[in-house]
Image 1 (cartoon, one colour):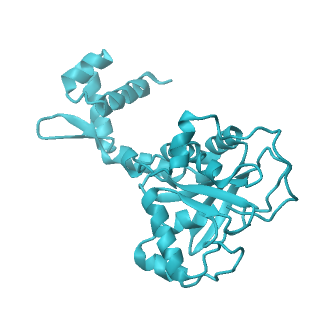
Image 2 (cartoon, rainbow, N blue to C red; image 1 turned 180 degrees about the vertical axis):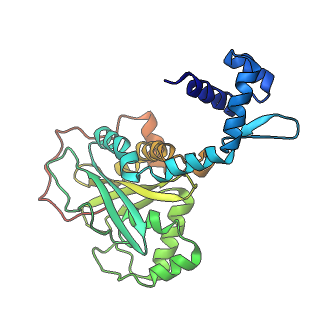
Length: 285
């Protein structure tokens, strides 16, 4: 590596950590002040550092522009991959990643469960907005006007007796889910499938995606699926951090009693040797 480049990077690192005067920088880098001054002048000309009236240096706009470009280029699916697979391995269940655009929620990644049961959800296909956890999570990121507009376009297909059947009920459920930090599909798309979903936040602090865990009720009862929430929320927090989300944008979720109880009881995660399972469903989450 070029010695001058290495020193310039050292200077930038020190400025970012609060070392702000020429004397202090020269002392920390271990070279003469004239050398550090030349580096600072070049960095200042290129916008990587700035200087206040007291001749103290700070990071310049070029650094923030580079950081923003790097975060914008960070693909959600790539950033989520490791955490999704860890979540699927930990729970043994099917995990989905979905995003929202122009009124459509689309699955962009899926990790199959360890169970013989296989869901028919497919990467690239849309999710039912009114009957899936990821749909409710992503609708919850919309403002009131946009939510009302999108909900007005929903065809409320009746999948089960639990499926939400009207706009007012969907808006209420979406807002309730957003307030508590997670959403559920309690046998709303398939009578034998339960699901919980939670948001992933991007570098701008907004919801960038949703992750869900789906479980057949022959593997875990509804309360057992709720007990997976801590693992789900830990995974979405890791993905959000990977995407550069500010810590303040990741809210604390309000967990149900089943999720709180799981920390003091036996693991809710089923083993491979579970109960018999039915034929493969057309479930989504």
